[in-house]
Length: 127
Ligand SMILES: [Zn+2]
Image 1 (cartoon, rainbow, N blue to C red):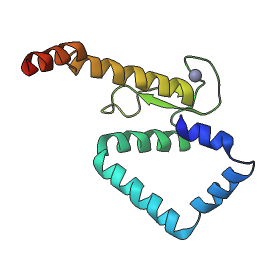
Image 2: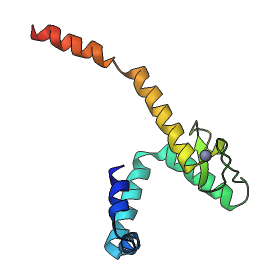
Image 3: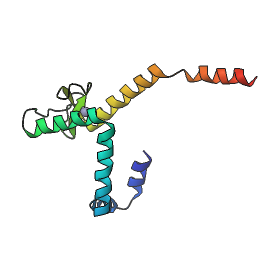
Image 4: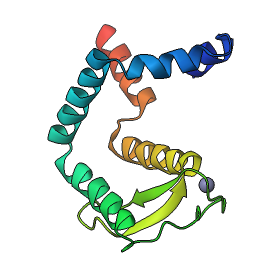
């Protein structure tokens, strides 16, 4: 959100400058290194993403429109299980993000100790 605000405040053409900076050799090298680190940490996800990209490229999988909002812009495969890499539902960038945030929230709330209970324990210890 903060990044988005900063981008809105930028004069027109600033994003073009950033795009050009990304192509500079040292920034490109940094991006390649960063991607390699990510793939090393997230092997299963990485394999699933690459499998979908390859299947789409070789016409074995057809990119559909977003299953939530029916747009056909910025559509990508949404995995519910990375062990089944080609089993995807198609979501636009916005709906994909919303679905991931909902999943993360559900996971976090399932794991988390209620904040109020934790505070009450801290108060008990102080007294
Ligand atoms: Zn959508």
